[in-house]
Length: 397
Image (cartoon, rainbow, N blue to C red; front, side, top):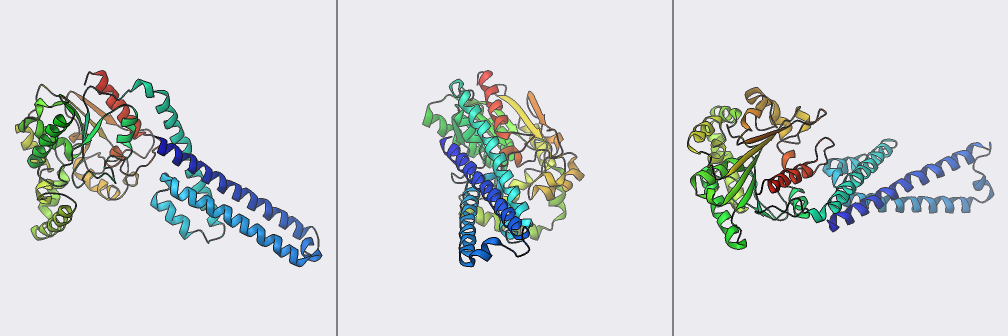
């Protein structure tokens, strides 16, 4: 939290410097325009002492330039919500008159909005710190979805784990292959849970699993003996009944192209840590036909509490690439969806929560894991997980 507080403080300082730059530049411009037009003979300072006039003007330009570059560098370094897009646009339009002022105004507003939003979250966490609202009886195991791995440098879950830790949670990660059939991933996760128990001495774990990770954990619980080690399973946007568009793609895309894509992915995944990755096996296990058949065999265990969460992306542009491209395809086969998974596929267990925020943006498959580290006005993803884990604590898990 201290690191984030320092970043937000720096962001505020950078924004303030940029505001001083804008105000002072505007004030100097008004002054010189007034001086120019108040006399038919031009600038009074130039008439009286040309050398001093240009020296003052040069000093003003240098001072304003220093203000601008200090402010913009501080904001670029510390304002996460600018993202790549606004940073690039700021550079591209920085030399275009008028447009560069509009762009600078957007950058300042984005920085100010982040300072306000994050300051509120920091204050909230400080107020409830002693309550340890996320300190559950059992540690939390966070299980990633397909085509991702758990990296220390790039957390699959974005800012969520740190928020949970700041509120008392103990967090572990699945650390399994990015692309494997459900059965193999389930076996990996069952072993991982045994390792966590041996490492910590805990009796069980609470699992929060996203996307395919929910299918993997259900298999681990039902078929790999993990029911003895899991207190609760919360699935997030998991395709429990598969994705019908995946059936369509596997049917229509020629086998040669499938093998080429699979070979390229498997080679890259192996270099990043996967052991015998299986792209085709992972994708096939997400199809509607395979999921429905597996549901008949992979049954819930009464010892484990199951619940699920889903969300809806309300239009193509509310999801970042590639979900903005897949949304319409998924909608044609699966109806309302999060960019990848249809709403009918989400529900599982004794409790289900569908997230449909106010406004037109919606919540995408990636938004549910804070993929883009974006502050969404209608949906505070970090606070959602705090409430989720707090509820597990209240249930005695």
